[in-house]
Image (cartoon, rainbow, N blue to C red; front, side, top):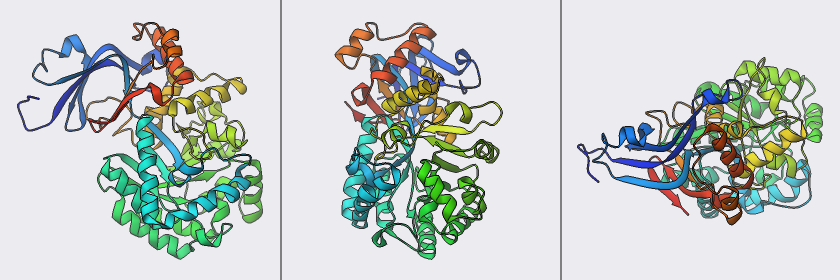
Length: 444
């Protein structure tokens, strides 16, 4: 590799696709950027330039070029909600949310006070994300601080931009998984000081959901957000009918589920609420006002029978809510954001709505980055952004090759068709390579 300074440079040649705007609000043709033969210049892990190969190749003739012929490169996928301690119990049979937690989830999470065990699962989990093209995720750890340390150590080793936090849970859970309002505050504070903005890592204050926290624990979670205004709040909201009813019984003073969090100061522009299947119109409006985000988790909502999320309400013109996709492993059934978008499309269909291929891919990339307030750093190939991206093969299986005889699209309509086939039929086999901060992190 030759270049004129000590900076590490690399050029990638392929077809490239990203988004400059939100196709839910602006005509798709104005949102999509596409180069059928593009050249991406990377310098020190960031995007230096992207354009047509023929226009840039002479200027960068001294840099090593890696070519991905007949491939499509998009920004790395952003998973806005999942649980690393639930990796080993993915696809656990036959329950809806509350029964599933008691029968499967809580016993498995009890193992995560063992640091070595947590480290082993975290390493497998992160490798599985990379294998599926996911480069950033917002992740639940377990109640034990050791589980957070293990996760962040493994994420740091892979130089990933990851957000995670210790679960806070001081009631309605087994004794071996409960902390107290005060210990959850102290432990979370220590973990924030240790990990938040440590390299590419960020912290999320993480009460599991209103049912497993007392008023006092939620109040102290709000205090952490006041003390550290740039950390996240990550929790569950209005996933399941029985859960919403139980919240009403536990918090008699509140006007609804979201209001429980609001009274504790937990609803703001860095708050990410998973699910939101059972939200009221007023709650959607409040989330919009607060500039909070929803993580839409279609495979989980279908698997646990939680219901059909109202995408069109979250993305309404009147009260828009930041929206990303979440795999929600292990209530969700796949680490693949392609498979997650596939189920999102079907949920839209069942509600007589349309989720176009570009809208689905937007939610998995720039939309997810916006939901996590990270769109200044990731989510597109804008100059200066961190170079996290994924190399896709629209002909990755015999059936997909038959479906897409020609790999590279030459028009927007062709591109939409190929992206749609990837969303509906693609999985980890469609991921040829994943790059993290400009370095190859996974290769099929």
